Image (cartoon, rainbow, N blue to C red; front, side, top):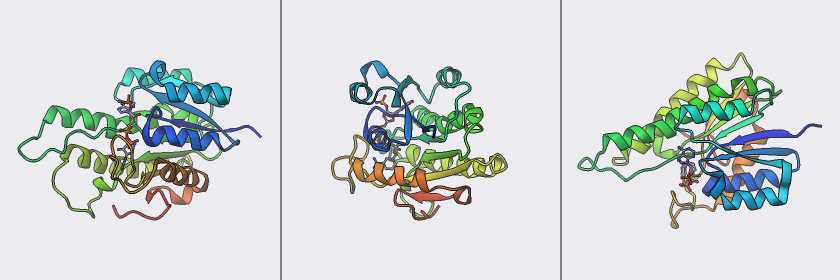
Length: 232
Ligand SMILES: NC(=O)c1ccc[n+]([C@@H]2O[C@H](COP(=O)([O-])OP(=O)(O)OC[C@H]3O[C@@H](n4cnc5c(N)ncnc54)[C@H](OP(=O)(O)O)[C@@H]3O)[C@@H](O)[C@H]2O)c1
């Protein structure tokens, strides 16, 4: 049996790095890990030394269309079973007095357009899989069911990626691609902070389980890392 393949963005730290570790513990998977600077990604390099060809490292900035195109070229002709859009940024909290529209746009570029760029660029690779899945890490902070002020850029970028992925689930249904958005929990990372609810291990284990369990019938859902529906 050929190995299943995972492409993951933002794999050098936080939830991304731990998710790479989790998939590598599963002998059925090959991991194509991407990050902005593989040369300085010492944790990924150490994993590669241990796992050899089961872990590939590629440079990828999801906010840069040329970088995405170059990555897609490098993967030409190879099947991708799971595209895990994990890379994300959360800028300052942004009260009404602090809103920085340029920073808002760059957050949107990474959190909203980034996953769409990857999904479109890797369509030919997903088409080579028997069970293609696109999982985009979103956030409860983008949910309309959780009314909150502040953090305008982050909240709206995640709400927008939810909507974009919902549309993609419909547009790719005929091609048999399952598309979901996932709230990974409030996780102790650089972004989540040390006071967050869960560890990276808990989040990554849930994401790995979800990737295995997803079927086309799940497409269009907003899920938690434990596999429950998250309110939109
Ligand atoms: N932690 C939480 O509680 C929480 C809750 C809900 C949702 N999330 C979401 O979960 C995902 C992972 O978050 P995390 O907590 O692991 O955050 P993190 O520790 O801050 O890591 C963010 C990752 O995204 C990468 N990244 C940022 N901009 C990028 C770009 N333009 N191109 C490629 N990679 C880029 C970072 O790379 P560099 O090292 O190069 O900056 C890093 O690898 C994000 O989408 C986040 O919004 C997190």
